Every structure is written in structure tokens, then in C-alpha cells.
Length: 149
Image (cartoon, rainbow, N blue to C red; front, side, top):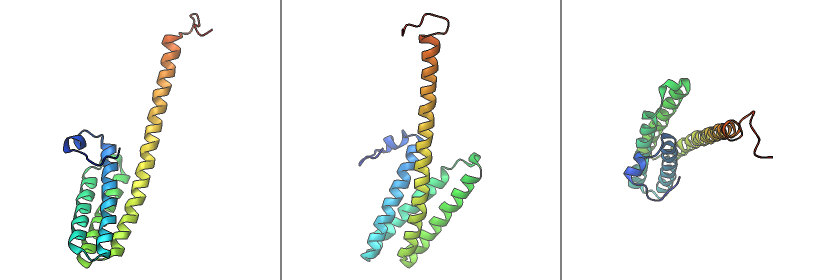
């Protein structure tokens, strides 16, 4: 779901998976903008974008489900590392550090999108299996006349 305008109420109604996707997209967009601003030596604007990225990374970390095990701990460590790199990049105006964070976040985002799609596919498969079972058991029950013939 990509929209140009998303109200605060609309954001609160999103499922967590979609919200995570939007946060990744927003952070990647802000990182791109920060790189552009650093190239133009617009340090105030770059600062704003980098601070917003840190806010997003903090929200992503706060939304982790630590019951998921090791992966949550590893993501938390990565989010903290990226946030630290952005703070240092902001202070030193280090474009390469911003690009490093962007590369890392892109990898995480791609993995997230792949996992989300597999989850949707699995859910769709379960729904189809249940519909088929319902069809076989209730619409064309075994032992009764098959209406399809």
C-alpha cells in the first residue's frame, strides 16, 4: 500500500506488517534525500532527514517481537548500529556512512518484503485449502449424490 497522503488515523488502522513496510520505505526515502542534501552541502536539511531516519529506526526497534527469538535480537542490534552510524554521519557529514546504512536497510527491507509475500502466499494457500475442504464436505458431501455429474 503506497499512498501519497496517509492520515494519522489511517496509520493506526494499518496491520503491523504494512506499517513496518511503510517505515522501511520512508527511511530509505529519507536516506536518499539526506545523501542528495549532503551532496549539495545543505547540511540543515540533511540533518533533518537523518534525524527522521533515527526516529524511524527507533520505532522499528520498539516494534520488535522479542518472543520471535534470536532474529529480533539481531535486528535490534542492527537498528542500533545503523542509528549510531547516522548520528556520527550527521556530525561528520559522512556520506559514505549514510550509504552504508542505506545498503543495510535495503537488505533488511528486501528480506522483509520476501517474508511478507511468503506469509501472504501461505495464508492464501490455507484459505484455498479450507475452501476446497468446505466445498468437498458440505457442498458435495461424500456418500451423497454428486451434483456435478
